[in-house]
Every structure is written in C-alpha cells, then in structure tokens.
Length: 75
Image 1 (tube, rainbow, N blue to C red):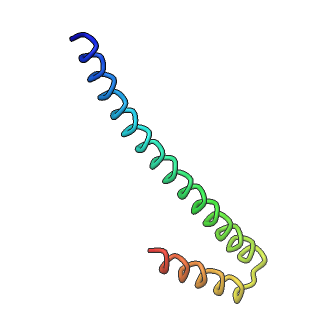
Image 2: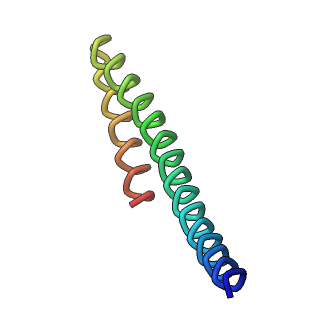
Image 3: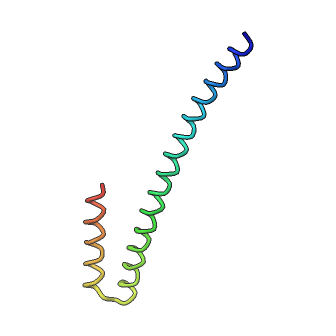
C-alpha cells in the first residue's frame, strides 16, 4: 500500500517536473529571441543616430525607411 502511494506520488511529481521544465525552456527561448531582436534594433538605432549626427539627410531617410520596412515584415 505504501509503495503504491509513493509510486503514484513519484509519477505525479515527474509529470509536474516535465511541465515546469517545458515552460522554463519556452521562457528561455522567448528571452533569447527578445535579446536578439533588441540587439538588432539597437544596432539600427545607432546607425540612425550616427547618420543624424553626420547630418547626412539622405542616408538618414534611407536608414529610417529600411528599418520601418524590416519591422513591417516582422509584424
């Protein structure tokens, strides 16, 4: 009787552990995707800022339009 109860508990524990592990892996995957996106976006904004500082209006306009085009595709 005791062994069967323990086995049932262990089985339930293992299932819950798998559910939690799956959830944490999903969170980690989402975090990595967010970090990659933010890094890419940061690079884009730095390029825009550099173009603005140089006062190159044509380069700035092209960079801004390209960034919006990329973001529209990703949305």
